[in-house]
Image 1: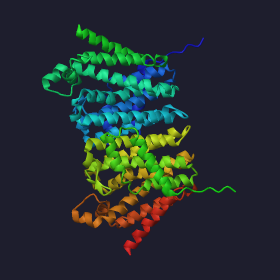
Image 2 (image 1 turned 180 degrees about the vertical axis):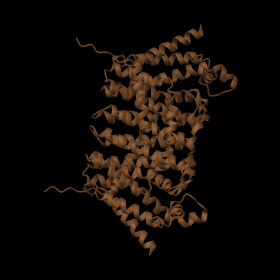
Image 3 (image 1 turned 120 degrees about the horizontal axis):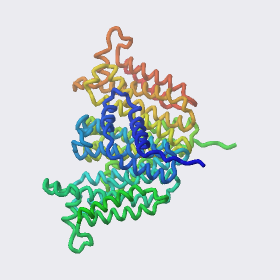
Image 4 (image 1 turned 90 degrees about the horizontal axis):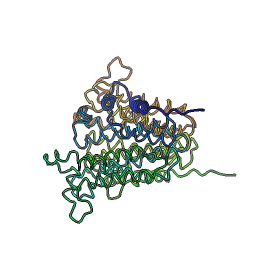
Length: 290
Length: 290
């Protein structure tokens, strides 16, 4: 009997990381500051949350190891592009415990590094799919990039974020599409295009829920610092007596629960890891409330 | 007898322009400043030199009208991305006779608009090729993007451009890859991958020759303004007695001649339009010298 040995997740993450680096760095001379800036940024990999979601979905949907690793690298490349650019636009000087790319190499190099990581993401996505799939993967990624940029653009005009709906829309549009894409690419490549709408709902709800959860953790620090852009603080200030939600915790709970429920309807339980993450955050919310 | 009616170039350019706009703009809400900034930039189309080169090559290589239009839109989308970004990085306030995107909408929006045009370029390239071609087109574009960014990065460190070789390398790397890509994409889609190396030589030589020619036109203005980054002035100041080239004109002539000669070796004379452009510039150089 032939047993199929599931490859170790850490091996796949490592292969995906190597591929991501190679796709961007092999195209430019090692003496170029562009090479240095990307190598510097990638030397601290971060949580790899999107890679893990993508690898897990690919495995559930029976994609090959090669396909899985390429899709994970594509999503992670896009995520890294967005981080380098976010830090520049928000003038955040620290990323992953060290000086951010724009601060260390200058804004122009951060812009060029973002472009190259974005370009790499498309090359990686296209490399995963033979036949008609390459276009479908690239096009799905283009849509996610456009939505992310629209959210990022909304985020630039901070004045517009006084209303809770706007702040929630930004959280949904800025982080939702890349979480969603981690599921969408494996769904496309395994021929489950009919589930893309559900994957987007899952990504959007998770993006909002996760952002509120995250801002709840920083709430007291941000309150003391007078940071008006903490979602949890904004929610507190606008949730009215008549609203069905009384606290930021309740709203986070609502979205995380919604993400988990929608995720369960995806084929082969391919978003099991995202469901687990939702459950984990929901439990933490309850423990904190207790 | 079935006669094949060649579509009018202006019709194809118009279809390509519509496709380019649609690919970027249909993905974002019409109320988003991101939408406004791109629509604003695209409302003045420029010379469409790369679209024309691409359409002409596609026609010579017997690609379908649909394929030709998609490739032209992809190259033009990439070119527009690079213009929006160049203007931002060089702080050039005017583009195509009106206020540049970064100056009108702010640097952050210029960055987002560049990203979306870049993303669109990949989606358009992938949409032109069924089967295995989609990956090949996307990967060819990724390589061109990387080379362009490497040249742009070199251009950022102006101190390094005191040496003529460096200045020529920047001209080659910054504008060569997108001229080359206009030929490369049709070559890839028509199955002539073995000519990609020649196409890159053509693009590089044309990029340098064209840039020197262009700077020769601005030479006296730039001399008066003390602009040290005019290639023609730099060439004057470094060409030594022992050099085989005595003037910027001679160097421009050399590269344009080289581009035209290499271009002639491409299949089906698919770079005929680029050869004509070289001949046109060479004639102007000779008329100016007379």
